[in-house]
Length: 213
Image 1 (cartoon, one colour):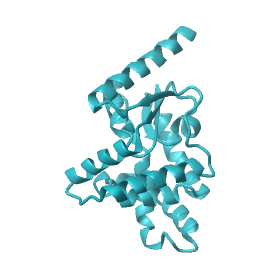
Image 2 (cartoon, rainbow, N blue to C red; image 1 turned 90 degrees about the horizontal axis):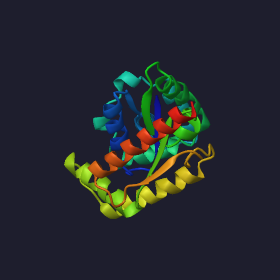
Image 3 (cartoon, one colour; image 1 turned 180 degrees about the horizontal axis):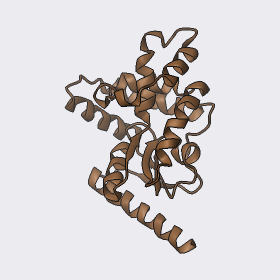
């Protein structure tokens, strides 16, 4: 069983995807960490004329075993990730890793921005998680503060809106709900309610698939 969970930054998709992995006993991959790791690797050259070549090389050389989420969840790294994610070479280099993870024998849960449309279009269940930008900014602020990081809420909101715009305009065109994805708005849901709703949607998708077969 493959479960695809897509959505914008701080929508709750990562937390929901991890919970789905635990509930259905499936391995979980936060694909955003791959892009964050590449972005951090080329941070010093992000405005260089050859940034696309540098980022592509960093993606090709990425050691997934060395990825540490503790160093990758800051707002600045998220901005770096969205800047290098638009490069076709980077996406191509990371595609194979994501695809291999998705198609392992027992299945998997992946969250990102184009899982249901590009990485695993055959996924058994597809969720697209959304939330109001202001709510998402506040969630990310609390997350960063819990890690002891200082937070500028106005800048955080501006960064999230700018990232949304970059994602929507990305040339690969993958950041939109798949035709068969279920939209889950978490604006007014706490995390327990969002997870419960997500589990129900996945179970409904499994039931629909079983009925068709």
